[in-house]
Length: 219
Image (cartoon, rainbow, N blue to C red; front, side, top):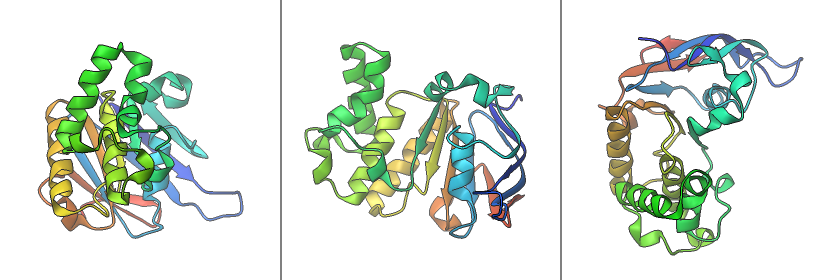
């Protein structure tokens, strides 16, 4: 099957005098699969996701979206790629939870379709009761789930999740895991990073470890 997203021999470092964080990373992302990338803090997991999202450009190597260079498809390709940052507070800027989840759909659809998508995303994650709340009043865990809802509401093909389960209580973790399963079942490609493989038990189709700048199969 043709990869939806592919990294070929990707190298990246922050500054010419710094060591490489990523050293020849190869990765193929296929529709309908959940990829779990584990590794110690500072191993480069977040950097890798940012390169996959087109937020960073590799020093060497290629990032291909549907067989074509990702950088040549920006910014329109952002419609196809959703990314959850490790710190959700950097993603929230609308006055209420409803407006936050509705922000991207409002750029793409009419208000009726937008409302439908907001309510469906909130239902999937069990946050219907938060919709009228100011985003500034949310707990850290609530902000993370709201940020996730704001991504799935516009239905991207690739979902990149940077430690999505951290700081969530068990019920919210269950909701997020069920949502990830449903996204993969719909043919979406999901990539998750985590320092702890146990949190992702029974959800990974492909498990990879990022260590010393390289991806290795298994966790």
